[in-house]
Length: 336
Image (cartoon, rainbow, N blue to C red; front, side, top):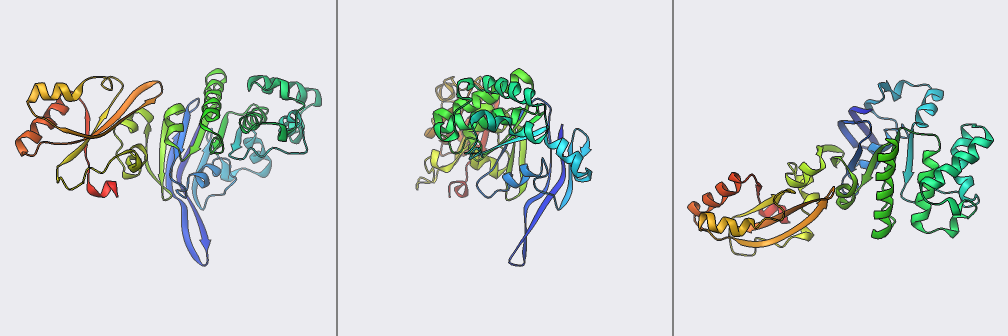
């Protein structure tokens, strides 16, 4: 549906050039919920704004349903943008317009029939659960309600894609979950392709099918969310999946060799360490552990200190390999 081919976006600041997006290639499939995640300043928001040409690229090509956005006329681009809607962190509602007037605005700009504008806006408000707020003013709404209005407004032109740029960052955890549930329902009910831009891994694990990890403007890793949560390959993905503040420092002077075990949905509830001891006769120290739900399936990770002897370490690692657990070495640099 959307394909980025070697996208680079270069800015010049004080005579110095820097790439906010650097040779990024990826594809977003029709009907999926696709995440783009990175730390603040990673370049993810710049990248997403190239998807509807709010940002022109310095080089490369953005293709929407096979058409290169960079080669479209202004009229053709306006038509394409009606198919690629967008919501933002701060809602961007017009304070001097009522809720339904805000929702009708894209249709008014696109010169829809006036009767259709009203009926379509009312339908969208029903979808987001705000039909009783049609005549309210934005300052009478909560943050979650404002974002629901923004979603309703984005849906009025019947888009094929919804871009969500940090759309839950200004909301508390409970309201964030409600908005993500709504987006998931809309994706399921009408087949809308949703692109989520976020710096929060909890958002990705809650809603996304696949995710791209952006680091310093480059594509560090892309793949199925469940695979990345159990076996991240890039250092950028590891920092997001296994953040330092969720672990203890395994290098506390003991000098032990440490490994991280990643559990998938099948093994997250199994007594792995107890079974290890029975099978090998070796004991390990658990330094930290956590679990999370990804798409309703339990996933987890554990950092352990291996036995001191090389023979004992081999027994433990061979056992983990025999039961199919993903194991990675934990280095001192990882915890800095």
